[in-house]
Length: 390
Image 1 (cartoon, one colour):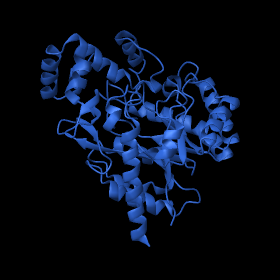
Image 2: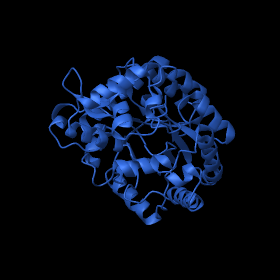
Image 3: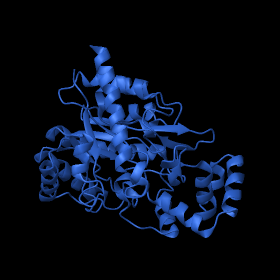
Image 4: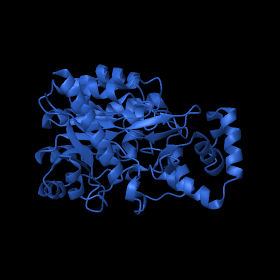
């Protein structure tokens, strides 16, 4: 029986979690990217090779690129988008020439992910990432003061947001802003509130229909290169899977995914099954989605969340929460038996536990020990399912 490939996200030489740490955690594959290269630029072959050699010297392989950022001009089809698409094509070729065959990417406008709290306390004393709808509405309506923001929330939320804002100290407002802006692509760039609003304004004439069209045009340009080089493309779902700040979302549910895969039909045009992102929407049946898009799954992010009634959610241990991780893992294991190359999966985020609570925080959600726990739990779950299938 074939096992999924156990992988781990590594942010490069400056990551506080070392390659030695990762190998000791039991992962055999690394998920990494060249974060120091500006968005839109071509990744040079020599830089790819240098990163690959670092990983291999530690006894592992570079299994997945996460991510080659999609420049905002491509998403809007404005400015220098054609040049950036050409750079994207060349980067895929350069990766393939170095034996890296899976690329994860997303098509979320402006923000790659959004949370309001990065150290949300859980009952056991650990901390996690949380999206608080009231806090987000307070940022959107009263800090950012986006035009029309209040219309995007139920009146009950707006009222609670105003009360929250009125009782927030300057330090709390600054922290909320910093937490939300941490989701900017790779967090390489620093934005003020005014800068951020200017970026949002660039999308004022782009609705979901137009953004979806732009995504499909992008795929028409890069999927042929993926086919030529035998690289698997894995689109990451929207995180969270609903509109924020007036921005459209086009990869939030099975209907969205169906449209993407039907518009550009290719076994290389695939999905990163992120249970934590899709799972926020209770209408997303994760095992059903895994089964429906089995042939398109090229990568899996396994994370669990706990939903709250008002649309808020927080990240919880991998085998707890509202995502039926057993059912999802069973579908993945079943799909994996039909693959020549195993599907890479990684524990997506983890709680800060034990002495990680005392360390300086690195990349939000990517502490070592919480992910070690997650990988161990997922590994055991997979083993139990495999034994039961014999």
